[in-house]
Each structure stands twice: as structure tokens, then as C-alpha cells.
Image (cartoon, rainbow, N blue to C red; front, side, top):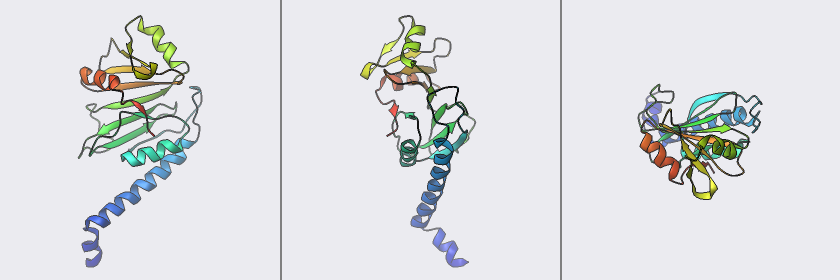
Length: 184
């Protein structure tokens, strides 16, 4: 027993255990997210999460599911909390060190991906000239009633993306940064 206690306190063993837990989480999420994936918003998907993933885990998962998962790129030391609803909406919340997955505070960056046919045209239709051009032909629109959220759409993509941050200025800066793209 004393040997296991001493062994479990070694950094390599703790890292190995963390990797094993992450792999199990990825496999479980893969099975759950891999079914019912569709850009048809009437399809039912399996709800998942919240689960905490590393950037590598998020990339592995994104490669295994049948829909894009948008994010704003990696951030050193952060955990990416992934949640998927039964309607196929996927939320990636950036959790700084020492914040637990499932924390109730709405004080972190969130990139949401929503299945939405003709998302770009739909966003243009409600923008009334207030859209902000993005690299690659996409547009962003600040939610006038809730400026902490910026909606984003790209040509040929049947998903709308929402960038949320407690700071409206940061939400807009992230949306305009060119970093919001599918996890690859």
C-alpha cells in the first residue's frame, strides 16, 4: 500500500492517470456525439456533458463526430468544457486553471455551434446593414439586446456560431480575430 501511495505521487504516474481518464472521456463522448449528428435542426442528438477536455482531446473528438465544433483556438493552461444538447448545439467553454468543469459562473468565454441551414443568409437577413465583415466572407453581428454575444456565420456552412464573453468588447474582439473556426 505504501508503495502505491508513493508511486501515485510521482508526476509521471499522475500524468498517466490523467491521460487515461481523458481517453475514457473522449471515447464516451465519441460514442455519444457520433450518433444523431446532422445539420438538420429537427434531428435529435444525444446530449453530452459537460465534460472537460484538453486541446488535444477536443481535436480528437472533433475529428470523430459528424459536425463541426467551433472554438477560438487553444489557450495555455485552460480546460475546454464541452456540452452538447439534444438539438445538436455544442458549447465549448474556456475554463482557466483551478475552475472545475460544470462551474455555474457565466464568467468565461464560450464558443457555441448551432445547426442552422443557410446560416449566413439568415444572419444577413436580420443584420439590417449592421453586419461586420470577416475574413473568408463570413459576417459577425453583435446581439443588440445582449451585446455579450456576437453571432457569426460563414459561406457554405449550415452552422451559426455564437461568441459569448462577459465583456462585450472581448466577445467582439474574439469574433473579429480570425481565430473562431472549426476544431481540427
